[in-house]
Image 1 (cartoon, rainbow over the protein chains, first blue to last red):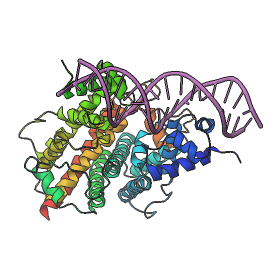
Image 2: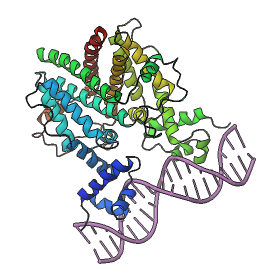
Image 3: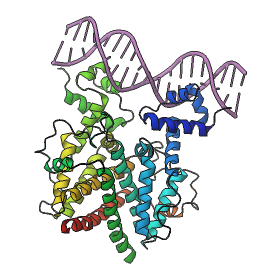
Image 4: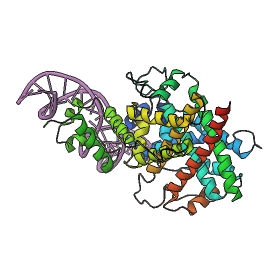
Length: 212
Length: 212
DNA sequence: ACCTGAACACCGTTCAAGT
DNA sequence: ACCTGAACACCGTTCAAGT
């Protein structure tokens, strides 16, 4: 049976999770599929096209329903943001892939639209709703991006960012104090705090926009 | 006169601005410097080391004083965020470079510490201050990342994200309505709105944390 | 319709040897 | 100390030709 586009994208996804985005080459993928490199270009117009397909698929894993159905828009916004983070975290280099994707497929557009639909329930006008949605997506992308790029070189996996050995605690007192009390759960808590901040801010901002 | 590390980083910076991160190769850089590829490795331990140096330099362009000296912490936070965005925007692919850098140099650490110092003036404890700083940096990175990757393939430069020709307005009504009223200034306004949301949120969040 | 063979124009990195 | 020459082990992509 001949290959299909789906098979190529499937294999690319498995390979991504196994070896990461940097090692994911078309030649390696071809080997995995038992085919010559050129064969891929029958199913995919370029490597970027393939990566876009992966990005789409990752966002497609966001569930159709997040959080309780009748919830307030603020709560639903948080649920959507958490779901976006989870979809990215479910695949190695997921955030980098999403950030690097050039094409806006239906899943990306759909997610953005869903988010705006929820935010519009605040009563704010379109421009404010759009800015709010953009802000949520930028935050989640930025957060998961650093979360997933924590230990790319050293595989110690111990602390979150490999602080250089010559870290001068005296020059960076706040940072040093914080790093001293880092725990394996810090990342999750920090995301939760960031969402709190965002949702509080959205409540104020969209509230004002709705009243105007 | 022999080359020095500074010359290599200088040339890499010029090349980055000219041709972008994807086209910036060690071989091309060597040609630019009138030297063989291998020669670079006397001054730089790897390409990643070079990119880290560029990232450090970009963050080093954030001015030492941002905004009015005696300003409230909320205002200073906004000023720092704007300064970070401007430093990134000043160089082609600046955000991608920052996001992809693996080493935490003194400028990166210093910026994070400065931000925490400002946020700590809210009276909130360390953990809340750290989460707040992380949130601001994640947002700015995420925002500029999409801002700079707007038209990577097509060079039309017209609208912000190249919406696919088959964009189905009926399926994505909110998005479609918003895109219809896009203007060249939207990006700047959206960032300003995002900062508003963030600062409002920080005021609530850090206020509660300080009171607890 | 789908794939091979073979090439084109590149990469990052290493390292003996030169000066 | 700094660089060349030359190699190693890769890349993404194209395209005639095969089946």
